[in-house]
Image (cartoon, rainbow, N blue to C red; front, side, top):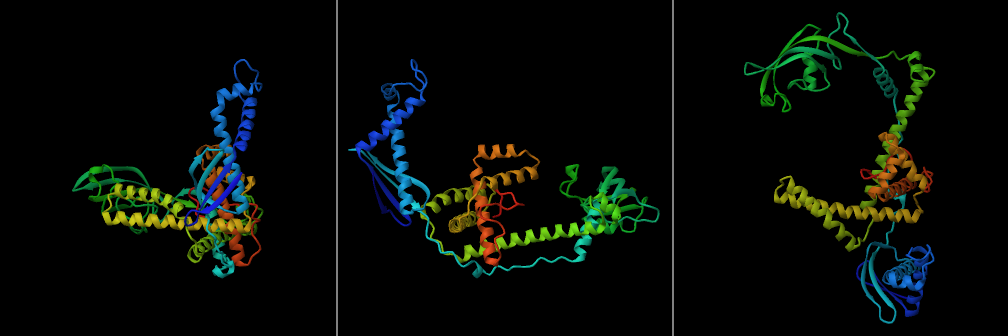
Amino acid sequence: MQVQIADAGHLRKSLTISYSSDEVQAQRAKVLRQLSGEVKLNGFRPGKSSTAVVEKRFGNAASQRAEEQLADEAFGKAVKENQLRPIGPISNDSVTRDAGLTMKVSFEIKPAITLPEPKSLGIADEKVAIADKDVDEAVQGLCKRAGQMSALADGETIAEDDSITISGTVSVGGVEVRKLHDFHHLVGGYPLFGKAPAEVVAELAGKSVGAQIAYTATLPATFTPTEHASKEANVSFTIQGAQRLRAANADDEFAKRMGVESMEKLRELMKNRIVSGKEHEARQKQIKQLADALIDKVQVDLPPKLVESALTDSVAQAETKAKGEGKKPEEIEAAKTEAAENVKKGVKRFLILDAIVESRGVSVTREDLEDQIRMAASQTGRKPDEIAKQLKESGQINQVVQEIREAKALELFLDEALGRPATHNPQHGHAGHVHGADCAH
């Protein structure tokens, strides 16, 4: 076997692989022996077919498989020995079979990337701080969710978040177009026949059950009957009933209902949850700052063919979408330009993160993938096996693996930028986030 490597353009290499006739025939004979043990032919026991018969039936297939195996062997060896780092599709430029086998392929290679010193990127290490009022609000929210609805007592008036039942009419041009009977509404939760939530709260403030309300407003576009939608209407109704969500008392008994021994312990638990949530938010913000800083400051020579291939599909999709939305010509061109910039930015980001992966030895383990699948199952209420099967059948599993790899690289680089010990060993994933098509990493 002989291999010749040559430059074939900017960030592109060509590989000429040559095998003698003896080497080709030896590989072909090896393939035929393998086929003899694999195929089942009439008149022969499984695995006992004669080489001559196999030659007659599968000679062409054996030649093709032998050539593919020789090509794969030579390509893999050349890439490894010369540290070529190919990227993108491999072009099969020519094949000749005179006096042996000669194959010529070409491909783009990853550019050399100089990563900055992580601490030079200026990522702020903000400390998470919470106030007692944050814990108070969290406990109050918990008490409210555990509360019960009850009718307003004598002397109580309508307030935001009360649930009211009304009866009345909606009229347009003096004609009743809708009758309201036992109509339920959450005060301040959403509009009421053309009145914004805040206006509804103000309108009902100080009113009690039995009060009569009347106002004029423009009906929403979603009003039914639809022929009266978006028209000015007179709305009048009587408040038949009202209920209020009474929050549970924040005491030790309530804490025990929540599974902890005292209100002090419940507050401590809520505080820890708040801190954890804020730390996660801060971490995600830092991850974004880091990714943006890397894209902005790192110089990357983009492989032309790789970018061109991605541009073709992305720009065409952007154009089709813009035309389908009835955009003007200048808006269509703007959409195409934006799509092209996003492609270039995406390729640059991929290459930078790939450089971090290689330089830090980041890898994705089976445990990482299984953790992500279990997390996705927990969040969607599906079985892990079902999600794993879907990922495999849809071909998305490689995308998820890539997302995990990039996320781990960013996490590791961020710890270096902040001067912290590695939060997670690069051989392991991190919890709390499901990677996939909508992932923000």
